[in-house]
Image 1 (cartoon, protein in one colour):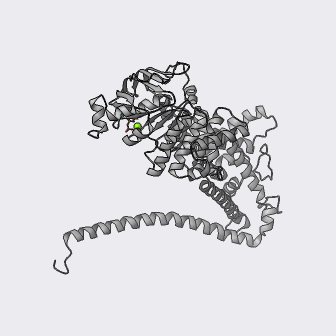
Image 2 (cartoon, chains in turn orange, purple):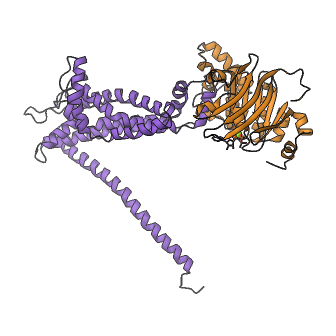
Image 3 (cartoon, rainbow over the protein chains, first blue to last red):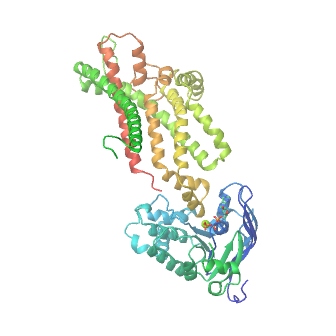
Length: 261
Length: 305
Ligand SMILES: Nc1ncnc2c1ncn2[C@@H]1O[C@H](COP(=O)(O)OP(=O)(O)OP(=O)(O)O)[C@@H](O)[C@H]1O
Ligand SMILES: [Mg+2]
């Protein structure tokens, strides 16, 4: 653990996290790692090293498929609950931890209803409240000006970059405490990518962010902390500047300098 | 290369070309055969109906409230048969659409792969039961049970026949709707679950809207099956023409009339004989109408995921 993080507050912490896919393949091996409040943490590493598997543990996505098994804990603060505890309802976890996927996946509904989706799931009926929160979320995702006159249009009519920002707005609308991004820009062009990166930077004032990326520059640009994973293990975690300038582990250095992966 | 001789490579190509031509021709013939058959049916229906309408005015055909083509005092009000067809079909759809869709939701969104592997073949088996069996099931089992609940129900009724017709259609709707729902990409479901929605909420608010065009297609197929179904109605709904919108009554439908009359020996060219074709044409037009509505629904709700 880095020692110069005295002023940082913990939002979550993986402790001895192992994960096994159905059939027993171990995809995560004893992961220990802090996630700091209102900071952007990037997960990097070669394809197949377990970044998505790790990310999807935070919102219990693996519970959707039979036979998957977690060991260890993900402590979540300030209430210090273990997100992985069997008695914790995955739906409760997902109410607090939002997610944005690699490929934009807007629902077959209007722009408005996409953003209102999570609020409706949570039982919100008040039209004024919905309108306010939808607008707030769309502004938060830097999409409001582009869609404010066509809120009732189908979301599938938006461009790819707009759809991804809509998915961000959808996740933001319910005020999650932690927001997970799994390669959110890999399906987008450079301009849309730039917009999302800027957004991530802006959003950390509101929410803690954990982002998987294959793009080294992106990790360097948007994140405060970076974790390097390799073959299911957490090889190195530290401040992004330190990881990129003087990595402690040889494997991290090889990956960052492009000798691998 | 000497002129006049085809190089071995080219001749090989020519051979393959010839093969492809042959296959193409066979495929074309197969397609042409089904198109020609359809055209032939339409031609016969229309030409015989023209003879019919030369004798009976179309206005009478559509507005008369009696259907007694074989009586001395003959009436040709097709609405009598249409009402039986529509009422029994409506009853069938009221049973089949909710039950079939619920089964589809269960199989696609809730059941594990084990349950699905067992349930799907059973459903398909149900779809293969001859309709005459359903007909007697309606007459001998369902009608007596319904009569306990509804003491006024006669021995033959559109309700009983329609209900069993609904049961017969359930497997079609369940199977096709399940296919449509399973075709919805997992990423869409994951998006919904990640927002904290339950399985049921995800199924209703995300999967069904995404699969709507496939669901609509399965419902339209169900309508076609119901409108065209014959044996169940011939056996369990009674065959007396009866202009009614009340499912608690017995009534003939277009199909049960046709089967009834076609079994008798009516002389060619007689008016009774021609009613078969006029009724058949009406049936064709009703089915066509539902299919057009179905196409329109499909275009309107085309997969937007
Ligand atoms: N559903 C699954 N069942 C079994 N094994 C899986 C499953 N999903 C992933 N794995 C395996 O788990 C390991 C980690 O996969 P994961 O998707 O987390 O990698 P990743 O780091 O996100 O890779 P990428 O950068 O390509 O997205 C891989 O070896 C992969 O083959
Ligand atoms: Mg991944």
